[in-house]
Image (tube, rainbow, N blue to C red; front, top):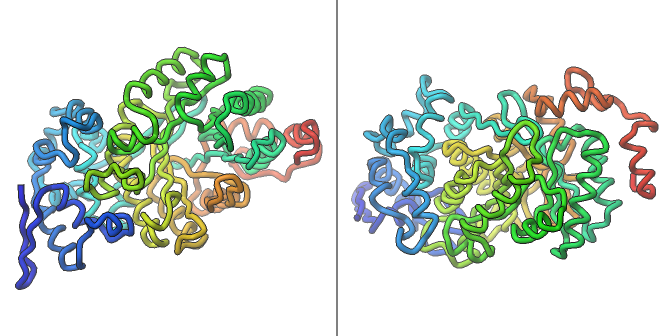
Length: 464
């Protein structure tokens, strides 16, 4: 179906919904690289006017990626909840924007319609919104998940403690874990990206993280962010697996490039559930995504990268994850060129994920060849915290020396907590007080040389 809109003397025609969504997107490098972006700001405005008039119901009739050839499209459309959709079924995309911004649309109403939304609907409405709209609507929505603690409660922000090391040296990993815990970070997960994919090294990292967690009775979860098939092998070998991690994308072909499909994700979820390691809940999947992944895999089907990112969230919600993390600036400037594009993408991703009912976090990050700096990351971190993001990253010094990119530090988490008065996961907060790292208000205490966590560093050969 073609869509039309006239601006002044110029009439613009958009051949189908996929093209309309691409032309309506804010300018970004990846869509330009793919040759699908609007050719001018005038065309972009025309596309947005046309998109605003599209009924939400049309997204159920015209697929951006063909139903017959894509299991993600089939998942999205087959699980669509018509009853949940009925409250907003009469709206156009533009009217849906106004509905979302209305004062009487609160968390309860957003939760009620979540299963009636397709990812493409959320992507479409985000294209009509300013940054402040994305922040305001996302701040209304709380998505709460549990494994060993409770993540996503109002007034709280969790942190993934990311203790990566370029050689997977246990002392280096342990030193970073100790550092992060002393700064009150790690309530989202203690999650290590392994430098290699050998099973022995992966199991060793799993055991190291679990040993520290269990020794100090830390109410959090651990994860080694390896391929899902490696996690299955580790489970079979008896390793202490809490969470199942996997990078995912918004098309079947993208996921095929990652070596996964719906079936293998379901198998891994069932295997981890059978271990019964959660104490306060059973959410145990951890997904990472990023705008541009489908294009980089030549698996985008001519669709814009933000719409495909939202479709990855349609896949994620099938598995009731504990954590979903958009690694927003990691793929590089070919897809998000500068700080402005990274900030916009992070707000879009968080907004779309929250509307779909996902526990969204963000790796507020950039690569060293992007036109961005740490001031841009300060801005995005602050905006996302105001929008109610569930978690962010905690990396020693904000500089990941294994993955070679810039993220947010333990100190950055302290800044945004103090600025906005945000607490941690309640179970983790009580643990910090009990072990003498923080007081009853969550403020950090000055460590002393005899602190048991610092003693662990000495035990591991002076890693501290």
